[in-house]
Image (cartoon, rainbow, N blue to C red):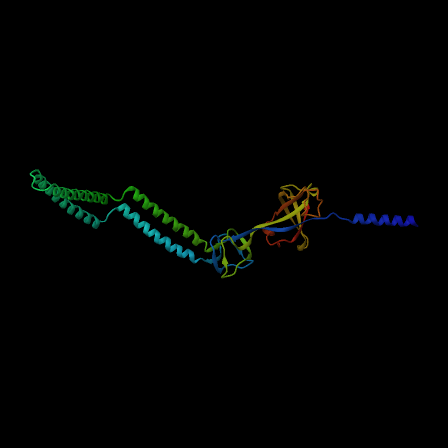
Amino acid sequence: MKNLYGILSLFIFVSCTNQVKEKPIEGKVEREQVTVVTKVPGKIAKLLVEEGDFVHAGDTLAILSIPEVDAKEEQAKGALQSADAQYNMAVRGATKGQLVQLQAKVDGLKEQYEFAKKSIGRLDALLQDSLIPQQKYDETYAKYQGAKNQYLAAQAELAEARGGARQEQQIMALGQKERALGAISEVNVAAQEKYVIAPQDMSVETINLKVGELAMAGYPIINGFLDRSTYFRFTLPENKMGKLQKGGAVEVEIPYLNHKKVKAKVISIKALNSYASIASAYPDFDPQQAVFELKVIPEDAAGSKDLLTKTLVVLHAN
């Protein structure tokens, strides 16, 4: 009787052992994500898309209100006008009216100089005859020198006005003008940030801000998935890597679609980080084995674009 019980127990144990099946290689449906941000802070003035919409590269997703940009634009335009006028004045030199005024100034100082020159000539003869004191002569001579210097200075001023400003002054004025043009360009770039543009063809997944809310620089306004970027992600230990290699053909089963199978290809195999040769983040695996991440893409990208993200899939190696 005891032998009979032993035989039955052994039979049951063997039967249970045969029923144990190898655990399938399970993974998830993933998509490449893209985040749309702004470089300039502003309030959301208008949202032009809704979650779930599909947009093309270059489409406007939202419009921001940035009052500071308008104010800076007016300042930059004023600075450009001023710098442009300074540059034109430096290149063209004095106006016709200014030249007439300078010529009249030169003529008047010339008369004063000629009169002082004649006066000093007369006083020189009187001084030789001791008819005037030396102090009187010195005072007149000082006036003569002053008139002469003023006349020479006026002549130089007139010559400079006729020839235009110095080369250095023209270069300085040109530099100020180019600086103002740079400020205008900077404002124009900032003004373009008012429009939040789709960088690529994408489906809008989440909109993180509402109309009237403030979008800080670098804040993710809209998140989305790139078009035709569906792939399957699997993690498996090294003892299951024998039949898998980069570029190899595989089959992926999709349980939620009545176990539909699609043809796919392995495009990358990457070893995941581990600590002291133990991949502690994956307790179902032998901790002494390395763990790899497989990225698999479907052959029919267009037919797989509607697969639900994060759903379960099963990998079958050929």
